[in-house]
Image (cartoon, rainbow, N blue to C red; front, side, top):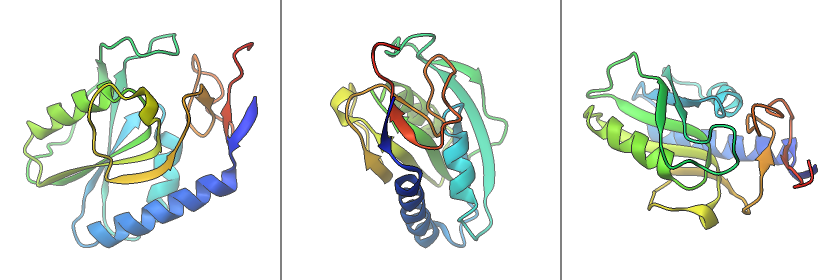
Length: 171
């Protein structure tokens, strides 16, 4: 493994995102919707920097299974519990890759008639995009490599690494 993004660079990106989100959502009491499992570390660090009322919700989606490539099918493992109608919703994701999963989720969320719906992603891998997607709050753009750490996994391993690393192919 080699370090691609250090914990200091991650912290700087999270701080920049938190400043922008605070500017846009102060006084709105938004729902931050974390996508499990990958976003949990990023979301935890992000919300600790937001000093305004907010609510947290989680949804668990799967499209990768045990592989490194998306299957193209999105499975809702755990759905929403809170109604989103009339609420400001900020979806928080660790990485946008092909965009298939996120496009599916955003389409489903639009049907709930939120007051606003925006997307925050720590990482974007645009070279793999299969669908058009607007990321309202973006931390960093990354190359098309297998990334692990800071919530990102490979077959459920390496999420606990404090840096974002490239998993070498021979592993």
